[in-house]
Every structure is written in C-alpha cells, then in structure tokens.
Image (cartoon, rainbow, N blue to C red; front, side, top):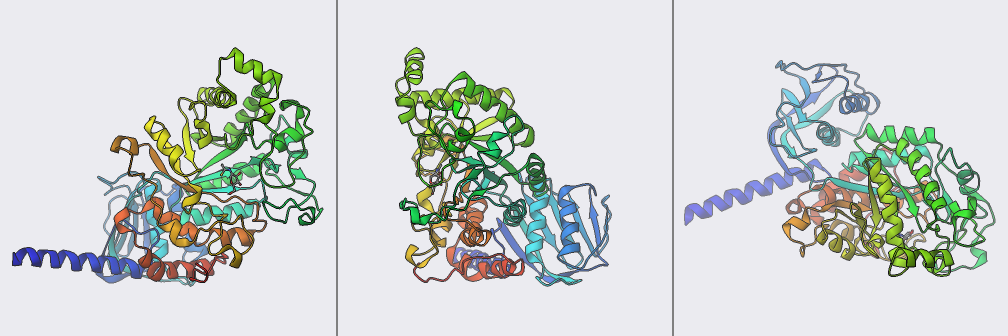
Length: 536
Ligand code: TNX
C-alpha cells in the first residue's frame, strides 16, 4: 500500500511539475505533453539550420521569421542525418506514431529537432517561435525540453464576414498570421450577403459594380431601424480575383485552407440588386442598408442555377479547398410562398412545402459541386426538408442541428452561437462594452466550450470534424474593433480546437499563459481586449 502511495505521489508531482513548466513556457494552445530537461540551447548566427528539403513552406516560414523578427539570416542546408552540435534540425525522421499535423520538438543544449511532416513541421515551428524572445535580437536562449503535440480536431476554423463590413487584403493577412500562430487551419471567408457582394466574378461584372456598393453606412443598432442611425455615405468594396489568389496563397504558406462562402438561396439581396431576374418577383431589390433578414431569395429557376454554376465554377478555380460553403441559413420563405412558379415546382417535384424546396435547391447545388470533386458545407438550416446526401453541417443554432446530422452519418462542424463562438457578441456586460449585437460571451465561455456532444455514440462522434468561431461584422466597422472582438477569445478557441480536454485549465490559461501571449500581441501591435473581470 505504501508503495502504491509513493507511486501516486511521484505521478502527481511529476504531472504537476510538467504542468507548471508548461505554464512558464506560456504556450497556447497547450500541447499534448511537455517535459523539461535541464539546460538551454542558444540559437545564434552560428547555429546550422538543417532540413530534409530547403524548398518547403514550413522551413521558408521559419527562415523568414528569423530574418524579420529576429536578427538571424542563417541559410538552410540539406539534412542528411549528420549529427552536429549547435544545429536546428527540421525533419520528417522521428515522426513514427504521430497523428496527422503532429510534431515532436526536442531542445537539448546541443540541438533543436523538430520532427514533423507538412503541417506538423509548421506547428512545431510555431511552438518554437512562441518560445523565442520578443525582442528582435541575434540570439535566442531556449529551454531544453521535449514536446509531443497534435491536434484534438482536424477542422479548426475562424470565420470573417466581409459583407457587412469590408476588410482589406492586408487585414485579412494579419488575421491569417494570428490564426497560424495559434494553430488554426481553416479560414471561412463569408464573401456574399445582403449588404454586399465582395468577390469579382468575371462573367457577371454587375455583382461587384452594383452588388458591392450600398447607398449608406449603417452605424446604428441591429433592432433599431431609425433613419438617424444611418450616415448617408455610400459604402462598398470587393476583392479582385488576383487579390483572392494572393490571399489563398498567403494562407497556404501557413497551412491554412480558405473556404469561400457564397450564401444561397437567402442572404442574396446584393446579388439580386445586380441581377433582379434571379429573384421570384420584381423586388425591387437593393443592396441592403440595414441589418436583419430580407425577402430577397434566389428563385429556383434554371436561369438561377446556371448563374450559380457559372459563379461556383469561377470560385472553384480560385479556391482549391475541398469544401465550398453554400450558406443555406435564414432563408425567408415568403417570396417562394407567393410565387406561382415555386408553388408549381413544389407540386411537380412532390415536395412537402418551401422547406422541401430549399432542400431541392441545396441538393441541386451539391450535385454540381460534387461533380467537380468538391463537397459542400451549409449552415444547419440545410437539414430542413432533408439533408443533401454528402453535405457537411455547420451547427450554429446551438448543437442540435449538428447532433441530428451526426446521427444521420453526416460530418459536422460545431459553431453554436450561444456557446462562446460568436465573436460579434460582447466580451463582458454589453452596456460596458463597445456597441455589439449584444449577448454575453466572456473569454471563459469560449474557453470552456467542448465541441464533442456526450450524447453521441463513439461512431457518431467521429463525424464531429471540429469547431469554428464566427466573426459577423454588422457592428464591426474597423480593423481595430475586429481585433478587439477577436482577441483574446481566438486564443481560447485555439485551445478548444487543439488541446486535449485533460490539459485544459482556465486558471492556468488566463493567469500563467495568456500574459505571455498578450505581450506577443502587444509586440505585433494587435488591439485586444484586456481580459480583466470588469463586468464579466
Ligand atoms: C445570424 S449565423 C446569421 C448572420 C448574422 C449573425 C449575427 C448565421 C448563419 N446567420 O447572418 O450576421 O446571426 O450574429
């Protein structure tokens, strides 16, 4: 019995010391396992940087970091298994047994080794970077340690709505930089909505010449359609296809996949303002100037489908992602209800009602997207009237839609608005915070979210691909405010998406590790909300 007690004592103290060391290292997201060793490695201009291949995105990223953020311009040499001291080795050797995107980072006084393949190597580099000093210096003293790490979920997403407010390419890149630092791998780019179409489509130039511009800027409250809340200045913006390619490439260099969203059949006022013949009635349609729901919905005609197929073809040429997000949320049914064409179609196809028509709409789009070797994602309303056979569901109205979909053997991304993943909600009492859509989403709520519903069986749980936070921008008109709403909640998201449940600890996160990262955010001039408990 005494031996058993001793055994537990040792286990407990070593776990505690590993935890403390992880704390002191300030790493976010918390790695799977961290063991410290006595001593340090000093990275300097004399350190040999060796890699399996010098032509590798992750290796290039590290070299760029050392040059720009440190004062080191070591050239990368080919690694052929040689053992030299004072080396930083980046290699796929030693990755046996690691799950996808995993890495092993070993720092001894003689050598740093990051064992990883592809994204794994990149994430090992991100961890190493978090261990580096903040000052732009020519040496970095790094603690000797052993880290083994891999993600809990394969889909780790962050969304940005650029329709309600437009954000520059430069800002999008800054956003991607942040995502990469915290091991998020999917950028959901919400490119179209009622208030603006934001991507150039060569075949339909009016989508941007008309659809990207609205008559005035909304400055007021969501529920308050008071005209005094509008300032009468036109507002607009869009990305050219060249800019889109630039963003996709920038993301890819950071192992981030960009998933474009074309919202359909609802949230389509901007497209209908440009091409009113795609609606069910004569409208009139205009690019929406207020927030909330609208009756502008694509009519399910052959003309609409050929338009959408053309647009999707250009989109798929720009975005190599496996998934194309086709929206499907908040489809106002009144235009379909009042349309003789739709009512006939419902009869002819023997559909039950407008929900059936919505399902028909999404299934027809899915067939087209699948025929090009891609898959669709839709918001959970795509469950209405029956899921398209291969669709992935993004569950935003709570987890119920996601749970239903997983039970039907469909893949799911959890993004429930009420559970801390809507970053347009206030981070403390909303009367003490900048104008927002309201609600209450403090850092702790984001942090404590667990995307894996316990009521699913183990087999059903395999359908939960991961988790995403959304940044709707009705009340986010500036970059500074977008950063304020994003940070530090995105760091909590990163731990939700990456770290094993057993390694999560909110006190450790806020008190020990977050301060390290806030210093890093300061250094890189991000505007974050200071996470103090005022009103929270
Ligand atoms: C609901 S989430 C929407 C968005 C709004 C958001 C505001 C979703 C699929 N639709 O159009 O911007 O609420 O929080």
